Image 1: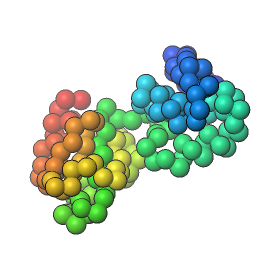
Image 2: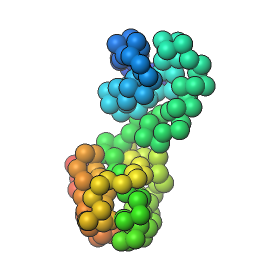
Image 3: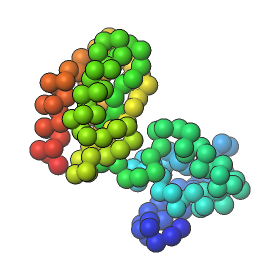
Image 4: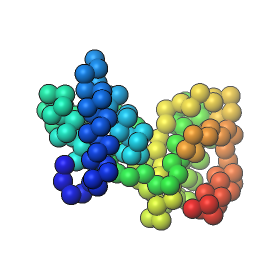
Length: 160
């Protein structure tokens, strides 16, 4: 790993990789473990993971880039997951999505300039009866309106 990751992050990557490397299908559990611990998978972690699993760097990078869940940059203090499944789209989710992006000034997979909010798409939160839905960190919210999102955003920024 290069100097762009801290020693602490390097130790986390090495620890998780060494503990899980011998599991069948270890790549996804390792990536989840690193993201759970650091909030993202640092690009500099790819060579360490590839070496431990005897994979090419392209193999590891391909998996990270295929699954939108994996981040390669640090997330904001809070992550808003906006549901884009059919139920939410049919219940105003498309308009809510436009409002959220406009209010945050970012698109999916980005973080606000103040580092408070990251925005991620989600493909069904299992809250279809209360569409449109979103999740803030680990809390699922239903029947979200533009006004409700503005109130939520104000709360997130005040708590930052």
